[in-house]
Length: 374
Image (tube, rainbow, N blue to C red; front, side):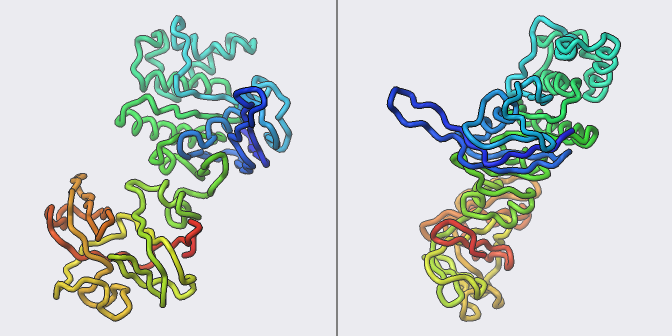
């Protein structure tokens, strides 16, 4: 296995017409991937995550910057000389070959001995639980089985680094869940360095040791799933990470209180006054019995919701999504929408007007520039 160093990497696309301007796909991206780490690259479509993966593989040449494996620069090495295996979204299996022959193909191209090919093929088939499929062809396999074989073609080579380009996106939701577990097990067994591209944040949160969030070719934040969820560096990361996404409300901070048209909540004294955005996760919104019907967050005079029966806002329940043990309440709060995740047994009814309280210590404040303030 190997560490991967991405240092000030940039990639420009050539102009579409003579005399036109180049298009910047990647700006100045620097990431250190430790030996044995599972790094996930996420971001909206067109953010550059697949281009970055292809640059690491050697399928595209960066315009600037350096790529290093275990400290050795590999910019000028051909893909085959980098000893990197890539698993694609499309499986890329040879339809006329059996599973055994697909697994062995890359090894035969490297002139590996037949005895070693047989040993590695059987070993990989056992690891991925596809031993009973070895004599079948891809057309006889389900989507999940094909993806296991595609991963097997990478595993059997014993590469230094594994790259995955949205490998589960063609599977249905149930199979994606199963394959996430298989990938996690595979990483634990191999102790391999893996870099994984996805647009699915559930995959990112469940698979990654660390997540790198990209936007418009730039690295917005990198950290553990918990880091990004609990302390997003900016409003973009805050809204991108988490399902349902974070509730955000525009307002102002004055006198230690954030206030908008329908929300009041105390904030840390160090937060600068002025225009701000308040963020609160759905699970940090609770429905309370406000007793006297006030519930406007003014119970102790400063809107912090600590007074008996006080809240931070009032809302009307518009839609309830029952997910089993818990439910998502979609509420109208003034002219804004807000989502709360609560126990189904405690859920109000559609059309009810309710008082809402935000969990202390779990609020997120962002300045007018979108950067985190608290």
